[in-house]
Length: 427
Image 1 (spheres, one colour):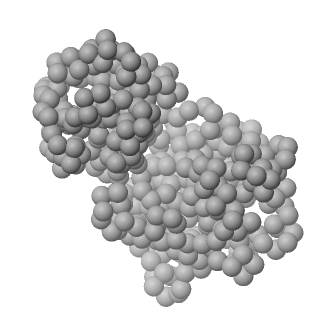
Image 2 (image 1 turned 180 degrees about the horizontal axis):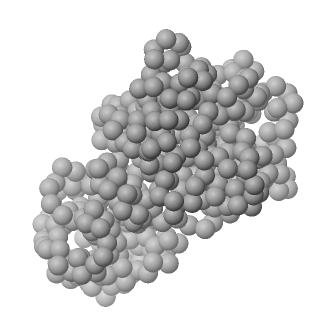
């Protein structure tokens, strides 16, 4: 059973900081040094100061001295003493909406809740991952959790049961507790839901749900490690999550495109890639404007752009015989996943890139848009771009429920859930 409960949160006193928009930040793993400095210029109390406390060469204001994790803990303590951060008066679930325009140009509103969820091992089948993870970020997040004793950034998960209808009335009756607009124009609003009856109803509904981690795999694995390290029963057994129903009309999954490097000066490798692709795929030249395979039907359809010839192509898998042989035993939803097809047949097969290289991003890169992909080829960072289609939500569900993990960066869930909405104490 999924154990979903209200949060006895540490949160900003909005009267002290001005507005939620001044102190909310994107998740730590998408922030560079320049954006970090910009967020701190917006407010010295911006959540980036504690969620991303590592030093940057951006001047003394952005370069904490000594241990960055101890600095984060010291900063939180100072904010609490100054009344910038306060303890919520009682446990609450937080209703959340995010109005956004997706990479496809469509306007949507995604709905969800913020709550704390009991940490379960993946083997229990209650909370499911969908991508393989790297060890480095987990070590970083564990050090930060130890120091601050809080979950600072929510894990974004998808639920097979939708809690939104249970909290929707609260959002219709009251103005939001806080609102934040990010640099991309996404408007995030949250409402405090303090009614114990609603808490009970949400808990009962989600007790029978499976939760699929959409964004925050490293944070969830950190929560497992922290729970095991502390031991016993207590707040360390729960972690902060943003939960959206899989059937929510505002939910969309966008693709992450693949980029290859190391071919520019290697004629033999470039030729081998071209011959291998023509053997497995139907290859048709297309205009750059038609590079995106969005809307194309069929198994294994990609856009390809080669910086050497500066031409675009459409790849379409000829048949599935070799794919099914190499992925024998894998569920069909996985065998028909574009990211798995590309990884199996092209990256590991034709290009000879190892699993270790893929996880370490050696010779492989990623981009969120066709425009970014082509820009990285133009500036010489990469040599070949493979443009992927979005993954249907039903396919994400089927793969997660099969207990199979997708290749890294298979999905791009947009928008991100901001850091700083509420913090969850874990010690």
